[in-house]
Amino acid sequence: MGFDRIAVAGASGSGKTTLARRLADRRGVPYIDMDGLYYGPGWRPRAAFTASALRRLGAGAWVTEWQYDEVAPALVARAQLVIWLDYPARLSITSVVCRTLLRRIHQEALWAGNVEPSPWSFLWRRDHVFRYAWRGVRNTRRSLAAHLPDGAPGPVLWRFTRPRELSRWLAAPDGEVSRAV
Image (cartoon, rainbow, N blue to C red):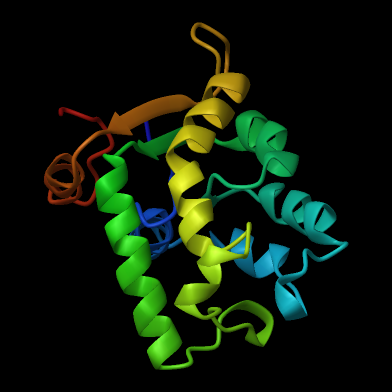
């Protein structure tokens, strides 16, 4: 059985967006960019985020990230598979720091034209990406536990605890949907 609707969960820096895009491309289905729907100018949440996300999640096939508790119930109701990148915090944090510094150096425009703030602003900004990433491992676990309790009906959950596990799975033939890790 194939999975037409897949959500990829994980802390910031775990690679969930990269994996979601790769799976969408590999399967030939739309990728839903949750951050693109969420962030408006000045890093402010868009008022229409939930409605926009729900409309896209209503489609027949897609791959997206598990983010934003506002849409988690819809992800549980619609997703057939949740892939959880449950990596050690040090891996995700290292990735976030490197990614953020490179984006900042290159002044890379992100969602709605936003750019990464100064790395030093983590000292005073409570919502700085470094602080958000640090909380991310715990928050992802909480969100998944709250929305996908053991034994409850919902999507299949595959948990990868090491990047090499995910790499092995991705190296399987294109049609392979079973998880033998």
